[in-house]
Image (cartoon, rainbow, N blue to C red):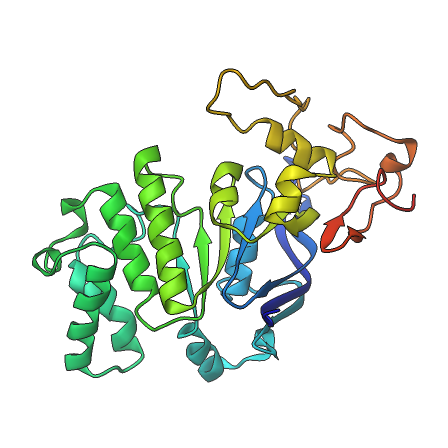
Length: 322
């Protein structure tokens, strides 16, 4: 079994915010005690509704945000203890593919400049930079003739390919893919996903793949983590989670995936109400206000994420001690 490249332990991120019209200070618990690990060469899919803390976790791992509490262990070292120089060195190994291919590229810079910029920051030889830029662009399906063009001259799918090339510029080991296909047409999504999987195999990459679309998660992931309101509610290998989900929230999400066969019928779990505000988190289990399988204990005691079966973790009073 491959060793862990990244481990996240008790990760928390709280944001101060204004509450009511009187300006009373409140706290937004965006990420509230998260633990997981990603093995070398694998993809961990991170899924959940909008606002559950997925993107915040990605930014914390990249140290684009500083956590309130916890540890982020990369290759055996806690990166939260890194100084400025060590953090710059870390950037060579940890990169990001952004969600929006339109906003993530500078419209004033050519594609060649955009992909070469990380190499320039890290002092790679100018001759090597240009050669490598053209090689990377070729890997993602952009021709050398297109290298001197500007972002507005490309389609959305092509721009995301450029974003992928930029993420690969420094030969990273780990990439946070923050909903990299959600802004693209469905036909283009498949091309980008297959490209990312091919590049993962070629360059031995490890991904944290953030998405709200579970069909996309199913296509690319080895392990899957389901988040709800800042907490992990279920974590398991892909095949186990998709075939034998345990948490009511996971079951509801899976029931909403469209099946491309009209002869197959599946019972759909419809959740009532909206996701509660992270400013005013419900007591006990955070999902109890919408749970179709509510137990009395759910309102008062928060469930602990525990291993129910081999490599299958769930935080639910329906499974385990109450």
